[in-house]
Length: 112
Image (cartoon, rainbow, N blue to C red):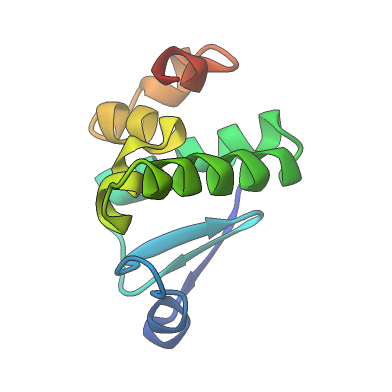
């Protein structure tokens, strides 16, 4: 699936409630504060695959649950964000431009 990329600093600023948003994937859109480099686009494309695997809604439910779980453990909002398994997978592989071709389904489960 090829997502629709939207460059909108205003939307990103509006979504920066808990953490400063440079880009966000809201299936089937990738919304970015500015033109994305290859690494950031790859990071967001990993989220597209994760969202497809979980039929979109499952991704958002788990994402919110894991973020809240981090907050309840005393983490900062930013630390809770970086601990979310979806983010861990995306950050580990965002520089590997071949990752999406070789990625196995449910790969994010390794980071739970």
